[in-house]
Picture 1 (cartoon, one colour):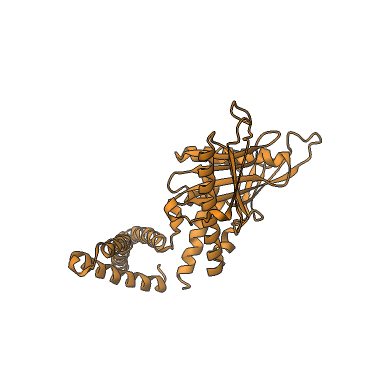
Picture 2: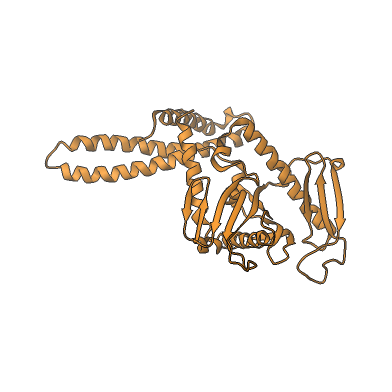
Length: 360
C-alpha cells in the first residue's frame, strides 16, 4: 500500500499533469518555443507517473469491491482468487510508481571514465589491478560497450600501476558509478614462496563522461603541460618520441597523463577531456556533501581510502561492505558477471531513496 505522503504527492502531480495538458492543447497560451519545449518535456515525464497512478486508483476500487463479494459464500473462493491477482497488479504498479518518483542523477545517461590504481601490496597490487580491469572489460563486452584505453602504466610482473579507460556508451556511468572506492584482495600470490596469504589493494574511480559543452572551462594559465616519451609493454613507437602528455591543474592539484596516441595533439586533447571531467565530478561531489550526507553514508564517499569490497580467492567469495552482501561466485564475477554485485547495491540505493519519499 502506498504511503499517504506518496499519495498526496501523486495527487499534486496529477493536477499538474492536467494543467500542462491544457496548455499543450492550447499552444497560444505558451509564450515561446523554449517554454513549449520545457512544458512538453515535463508533460511527457508526468504522463508515465499519472498513468500508473490512475491504474492504481482503479485497482483500489476493484479490490474494495472484491472484498465485499468475499461475504458471499457462493462467490467467496472466486473472489479470493481475484483478490490475489489484484494484489499482484497493485504491488507491481506501486513498484513502478516509486521508481518513477525517485530523484534522478542527470549523469546516469552518460558514458564514463574508469580509473584503476594499484595501492598497497606492491607487485601483487598491480597484478590485481590488471585482473580488475579485465573484469570491467569483460562486463563491458556483455553490455556491448566499447572500451578504450587512454593511459596505462604497466606493473613489473604484469597488470597495471595505473590505467585509465573511456566507455563512451550511454548509461555506462549509471551501471558503474558504485564501483568507486577501495578494492581489497586476499590470496596467496604466485610470487609468494611460503604460501602465505597477502592482502593488497586497488583503487577505482568512475567519473561521468560529460559532453564538452557542459564541462567547466579551464583557464590556460592554470595549467602546467609537460611532455615526455611514452612507456609501455613494447611497440615500435614506444620511447621514440615525446608524444606523451602530462597536464596539471595548478589550483586543484589534479594531474592527468595520456600516452595512448602517437600524436602529442591527440594525447593532449584526451588528457584535457579527462581533467575537465574530473573537475566536474569534484564540484558535483562537493555540492552533494554540502547539501546532504545521505549518498555518502550509503555508498561511501568514493574516495580511494574507502574500502568498498573484498575479494577472497581462498574462499571463492566477494563481499560488498557497504550493503553487507556476499557472493560465493567470485570466479564468475572476475570473468565479467559483475551484475551479481551491481544489482544488489542499486536495489539498496533505490530502497533508501524510496524510504526518503515518506520522510520529506
